[in-house]
Amino acid sequence: MFKIVKKEVLNPTIVRLVVEAPYVAKKAKPGQFIILRAYQDSERLPFTIAGEDPEQGTVTIIYQIVGAGTLELNQLNEGDELSDFVGPLGRPSELEGLKHVAIVGGGAGCAIAYPLAHKLHELNADVCSIAGFRNKDLVILEKEFEEASQKFIKMSDDGTWGEQGFVTVGLENEILARQGKENQFDEVIAIGPIIMMKNVVAVAKKYNIPCIVSMNPIMIDGTGMCGCCRLLVGGKLKFACVDGPDFDGYEVDFDSAAERNTMYRDWERTKYEEGCNLLKEAK
Image 1 (cartoon, rainbow, N blue to C red):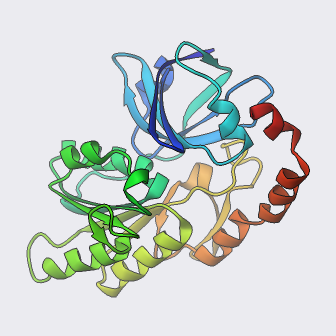
Image 2: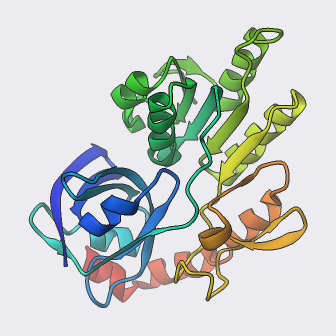
């Protein structure tokens, strides 16, 4: 069993948990993920590791309450225990040697983007973080990004936080400001909704800057056995759980990934309207 040592509400739908998991904390690296179950018969939920403390033996995750599984997870509080907490899984992000990096996060994807910004900052890289939210009420990790970034660009759809516009606007403006200078980005790392990452890749490609994206498709076992998290990358079949989650954004087929990620949407909506038993229990 894995004890929840801290629970913190970051905004109305996003929560941060610190979990006692010493073996995971000892091995975890930025970019990797875990799979947990709230109760013994719960859904398996994958979450990117948002932080680890080997000395305290704790791992931090950040989740968004979007369905029955996360509603159930959110019933647990400090002092409660998770049934399972398996990891670290996936390949760590390749950050060594990068000198000037743009970290682009959208919405809940900022929870995954932050540990990369933090690690790059520790490696003495020039980190420019660009975060985007629909409005100021949904902002998370603002202080953390400011501390981990040489420059922090804030974007919001309605202009209530930072500049009004999408993260692609902030990214392109910063690329143009660095044109012809030694601090032009070596790499752009994008994490967030599929359409956001697709558009970020288009901007990076326009200026011939390498772009890495973190893919989070439907996943079950996290070991490459079930095949649910398959993606087309460079025309080849890849599994996000064992080959990723980081991939060359130039090669990812975002359209097929988006289609797979929404393939159960109508079914889920119907079940919700009919009154899903799990949702009833989670309430």
